[in-house]
Length: 114
Image (cartoon, rainbow, N blue to C red; front, side, top):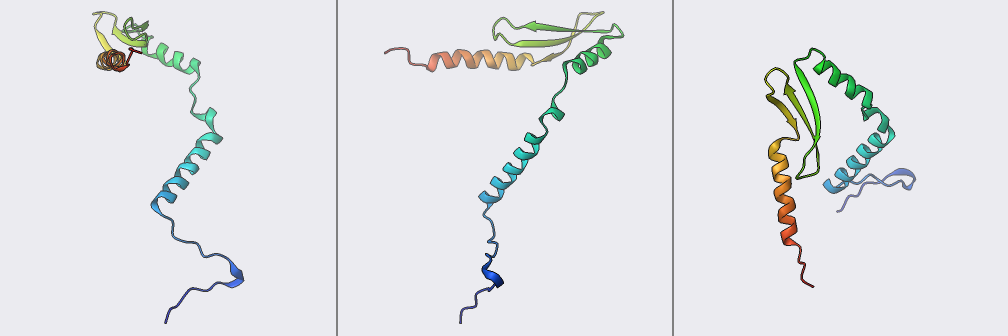
């Protein structure tokens, strides 16, 4: 004997969702949450400048914005004013070297013979 669930009014009983359906629904929920409030996550340039001024206000540090010659990417360096020693660089030197190596490698894989 086979027993099947019955429901009133012909409404469909919710079927269990597959993991793919669950992930897809979660992604849509996240996208709608972030799409509804894009201004909340943006940082105003004035805020960034104020943070830099707070960091450099005591005269111990200086912040330098420079263009890397090889990668043509903006590099931010925090330097100790008294010793001239580099404290932090964004992006780090390793990332810049990797990007340059990747660009060189990418140029080698492109078939230029017609």
